[in-house]
Amino acid sequence: MARRNTYKEDEVLETPFDYHHLLRAWVYVKKYANKMAVALILSAIGGITGLFSPLITQRALDVAIPNEDIPMLLKLVAILIGTFALSVVFTTIRSHIMVNVSQSIIYDIRKDIFEHLQKLPFQYYDDRPHGKILIRVVNYVNSVSDMLSNGLINVILEIMNLIFIVVFMFIVNVRLSLVVMCGVPILMVFMFYIKNKQRRAWQQVSNKNSNLNAYLQENIVGAKITQIFAREDENAETFSVLSDKCRRVWFTAVRYSNLVWPGIDNISVWVRACIFIFGLVVFGTDTISVGVIFAISSYAARFWQPIMNLGNIFNNFINNIAYLERIFETLDEPITVDDAEDATEMPPIKGKVTFENVTFSYDSSKTVLDHLSFTVNPGESVALVGPTGAGKSTIVNLISRFYNVNEGRVLIDDLDISRVTLHSLRSQMGIMLQDSFIFSGTIEDNIRYGKLDATLEEIKEASKTVCADSFIEKMQDGYATEVKERGSLLSQGQKQLISFARTLLSDPAILVLDEATSSIDVQTEKALQQGLNAMLKGRTSFIIAHRLSTIKNCDKIMYIDQGGIMECGTHEELLAKKGYYYHLYTSQMEDIA
Image (cartoon, rainbow, N blue to C red; front, side, top):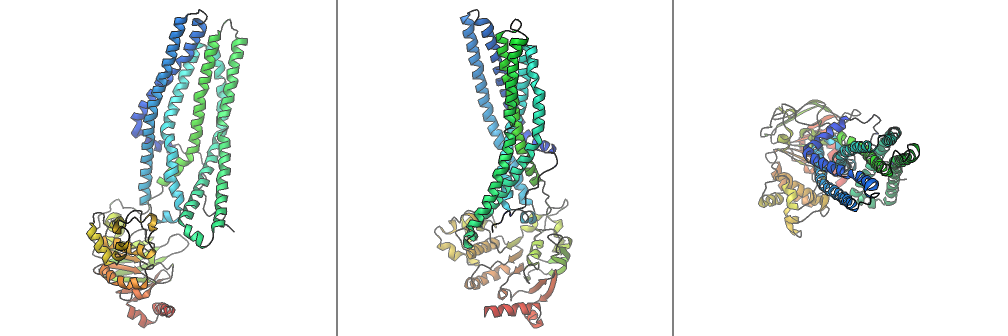
């Protein structure tokens, strides 16, 4: 049976929209306030120029045509064409300005989100599908940028248009203008009724799209596994379910959105009908001319146009409020692992590592490390062994301060690592993970990632040391070979060798190898051993490996389980004790035999 929903829904925000978010959004808008002011002025001039059209038409109907004054009529037509041309020119210039502003706001918001994401702890990425993060950086930012640029300008512009229309309308005739204004209270009641329903509906669209995007991203990355286990039909069914949920909530949201403009349009039609009824029947043509009725009717149509535009802007505003909330929710995500206010630069590391009564848990349900204490001297190599989930990787993650300890301290060269800057700490450490991540680009670029100013000769020397040079030179373009996304053209073993070269090139003071040779065949590993010995020489190193034959020469072997160190000693000492390590080692040797 297919999975019906593999993702936790984004929380629906039940509280009213916090208008503080709009004040925060102003930070991104005010940088371009001058450009937006110019665009607003141009739009206002164009709009006001266009408002003279009904007055010109009234003059033509009431004076020029009845008096058969052809020169006046031609003059009025020329003025009418001129006002239209000016309006088009100003609108075009304003459009160019606002495109620039909109793209600049997109750039600024994306830059802030990306920089913030770079600083968030591992826990944040452990708890969220990457597709949900991606949709906030790309889709949501695109959506809100127009609201913050054109939306803001259009709100001000339409309000100005509305004010000028009312002024021009009252200049033409006060009584018919009051007839037009009677429709406003009806509109206000209608808009307030629909507002909250729209916001909730578009939040649901945001949530369902986020779930769909997360599932899609996961399946693209895991396409090979899908085909290996013949899960195509089940995954297609799950995708269909998620996609159907998106479709249904979108229809609901659109249903509410589509009520706005027909509602305003209906009110407009009824009001314009009342203009003719009152103008021709109630007030009579003796006091109100046909030209006045036509002018007021034109202004009434224009009066409802900015209101309809404001309704559409409001519609778009409601649609994007949920996106703005999610963007700021991401930006408000606390950076739990960060430099302390009084953090200092880590001096050149000598390599002494000390754990003092360290307690750590990823959540409150299970303690991974319980008052763990040990000391590793500079230049020592330490192997961490034990059952899966015992806390081996947790120990090396805490040394690199990817997580904060719950209790106790981690010290390097007797300095508490929570009191030094992260950059000065991590820049002196080399970490090789089991999952060797390869970036899009060339092999040379991937290795140089460990030292951005490295020469090609230095890259080749590091590659030779870890036995990567032989397969790289055989590739079509050697070190300039493009390896595509996630190194799709490379085997797992080749990825690990490239990662070895990258780590060695960075010349770390403390080296961490977390299952770093798990995907390398035994023959290559034996050839690599000489390079590994060169990497370990003079460096404090922590090695996690399931192949116990690769750690026999380490200075210390720690057997980790039940939140602490169950045994510690050299390979020979631990075998002689015939304890945990002895049973683990002998069982592995029997499996190999």
